[in-house]
Amino acid sequence: MEVLKEKAQLQRYTAYKDSGVEWLGEVPEHWESVRMKFLYTDYSEKNKKDEELLSVTQDKGVVPRSWVENRMVMPSGNLESFKFIQKGDFAISLRSFEGGLEYCHHDGIISPAYTVLKQRRKDLESSYYKYLFKSHSFISELQTSVVGIREGKNISFNELSYSLMPIPRPEEQTAIANFLDKKCGKIDTAITQKQKLIELLKERKQIVIQELVTGKKVWNKEKNAWIEPVEVRDSGVEWIGEIPEHWEVKRLKNVCRINLNSLPETTPKNYEFQYVDIGSVSFEKGVTVTETYKFKSAPSRARRIAKTGDTVISTVRTYLKAIDFVDEVKSAYIYSTGFAVLQPESIVYPEFLAFLVKSNSFTDQVTINSKGMSYPAINSTDLSNLFMVHSDYGTQKMIVRYFKEESAKLEKSINLNLKQIEKLREYKSSLIDAAVTGKIKVS
Image (cartoon, rainbow, N blue to C red; front, side, top):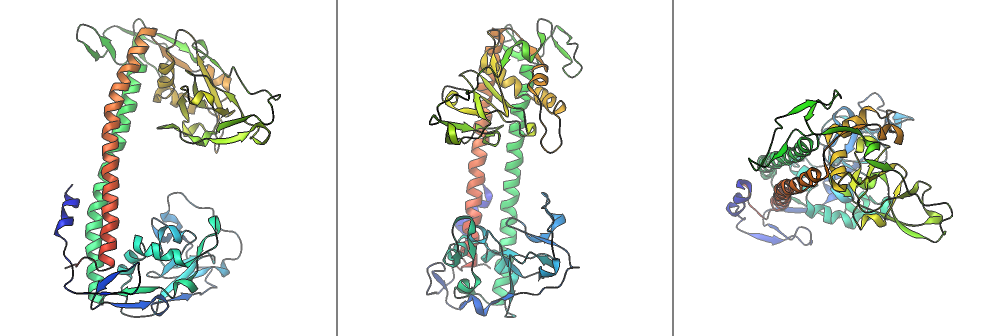
């Protein structure tokens, strides 16, 4: 990757001195090291209720609420108590101990729970400190200013004010910021391109499933390939369209049984199990996490029993597409009653059923037949009446085998790009750290 090749070309300053603090280490000899309290002050101006309401975010900084995609709940109460913050100021957020200080991009007001920092010296370029205050080196120093524990953690400016901060010459501050804007921009572009490629590869997986389970591609022995079927007929279902001549259309209830087994209320109170809730199942990865409970303290919805070869599919919050094939390990779990457990009949190859209900053609029908806006749900009866395309058992096995082969190739490419993205992010982080602490010389 070109952006990584540039690393070897970076140079150092000619002379360094010990900064006196571990997080900075050696700094260029001509740089100052000054305590934070001499650079920034805790600023609190209120009674500005007519100013624009801002959001303090880790990824975008302090921005108007209209800039935030997932709109936050509007605050209630007296806006006169909210703090005024100007472009170029910084905010100590409730998660700053994890992600650094937030740069303000726009004048407005923020919750009084945040600390507003305004610079005290004229020779400070906020564009440089925007990078410094987000660097891993600085975040490590922030840990010395944390007060509270666990979810109650926060940064005390009284503590932070005694931390030493680097001060390059003003022209160097500007040069460092410009350098990082350019380099980080290239890295971010490369990351975005790889993320788009990953999405295309995921879409390709879905296309392969769709083509196979709906009969748009069938195995041809003579050509030794998967091709479009020659002989087709109308399925009689508008959204399915044409299907291979010898395939059928069935309702889900004709190929599987639903919710056969549940934990009885007579279950011993000390019976211990791993529980899977709706939010614990990812469309891409299946079951991602479980919680251990005893029956007496478990949620009342922890009742569904699944066996090896079954498929679980969410019937509440159906937009999550929480679907997974149950293997031997997962058969030991207890699932939420928010799942439907599909037990295939003998005419259905178990893994084929899982692939089928994960296809767009099926999940789209689940969505269409779900009721409710905030928490759309489909009942078991409506789910069981959804249509599916049915082929013979041998064909289903071939489809599963072929999809696994194709999926493995696509997953290999996806994982390669994920690793490259991780390397790019690591390089970006190390580049920022090196530039803002003077470990490399910016020309």
